[in-house]
Length: 400
Image 1 (cartoon, rainbow, N blue to C red):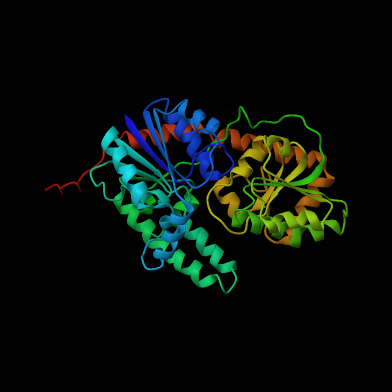
Image 2 (image 1 turned 30 degrees about the vertical axis):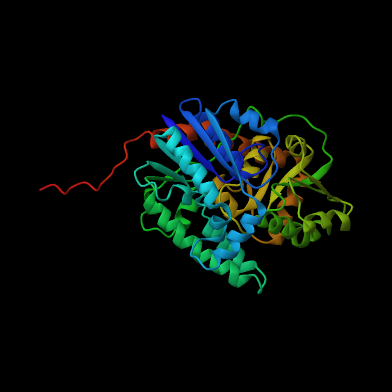
């Protein structure tokens, strides 16, 4: 099969969740199909990263989106019904490139990741299409609205409503729809959402597995540190949880590791000598092995937290919210610990820091859960069966 994959970012290197999912799915699909990878891009790209993608894709097309066009599209989006993050990525010149790619290669199927890319194939009605929602963007925006400043709230509320309408519209225009978790599926407002296919992420256990390291920090948080849910989570940890922990253990240290930390995150290290903010690291495993406990008190956001899967695969005991664990599915109190408020997070942290045997128990159970539940090969098998299945072009006629 000739498969066209449309992405809103170049999926390598793997420093963001959508890139991680796209990379592993595309790489494994390329072992079975002729993959034409088309990526939108608004940043500088290293030639070696593109060469790596070309090593397994039949064709790679990178469409650069100039900053001035992005700004213009966002301004004009005020007067349209498109969600701003769809308008951000959709441009007339890029549309012509995608149309030309479709005409040239005549793909048998199109896989779009996120509704940010769907506008490019919206009018190709006869082309079989699969949409990977990944997570429910409208729900994530709704949660950001609830915690935003009064000045931003009207804009975020508008974006929430637009995303809800657009997600429903794309649901009807695509032949197959997949999503990362049952929780995110249930966040969609479409009446036929129950028929979606849930395909969770996997974990590259040949890369992420327990390895020895020098413990230099007590606590660890990782992720894209310019992503609002991650910023919200780490500020919650530092401002609300850590003071309670330090009443009993004043020297508890925290490592915040991940790409592109925002000024608010960098400031945490400037104000507290026991907090380290690394920014991007070449091998994130060095961060995982340097801390005793992984803490991710996610309060907003959607999807599956890859940081938790990686930490558990590395053999770390993890503490998170019920919101994040709904997608992970680990057994609370056995494979993971769940915090509900600052006091319960602090109690879990103090308990694990004081009891090495308990850290090992939680870590071992979490590790077994990840190995048995999250597998890229299984995810690709499910997706492959979906995209190669016959597409129903009309509703079946009633019998009798």
